[in-house]
Length: 223
Image 1 (cartoon, helix red, strand yellow):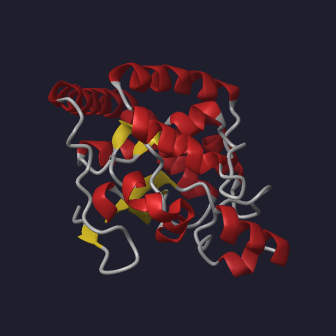
Image 2: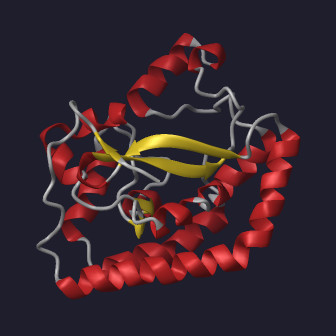
Image 3: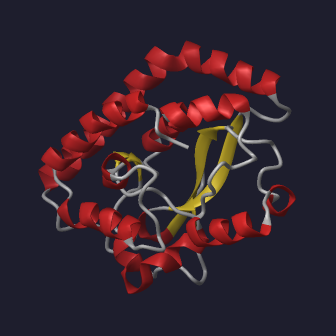
């Protein structure tokens, strides 16, 4: 999958986290590859069944792709199981004026009317994120890292946008395990949690986040 760099509006070339110990970078990438391969092999059959259920439940592809901002401001196509109506990007069709305002500020909406019945289960359990292990294998994401954002969200990080883009985005991260749905851009809590990980990333923090993710998934609090 080909990535492309924004011509304007995103951080300029990022140096990444070259200051991280070589051993940490090597082990993190090795763990990403090994775990992703295991997940894909073990869950391939259940994922195919899930894809069939999604396709039968609503029209459209069972998969959803969206351009996100990755390491160094480069774009890549994020993969997910589709949890919404096929025309979900047409937000004005589904949202009230109040919901549109919330969407523009937070990129999420309470009781989102676009989510399908199967999609609610996928989101509560985070199963909709499983296809992103393919993004990890492609080197576009890591298992643990800041959540990849769309262009419109980068401005929430102000003059720290380049710092936010200095690590590979992750399937799970500090924000998800610490606050899940309770961190917002408007309060600054989401930015604070994401930047905390970027500043303090280490093997022990990555392992803590990875293990805590299973508890979050088990509680079914995603939306």
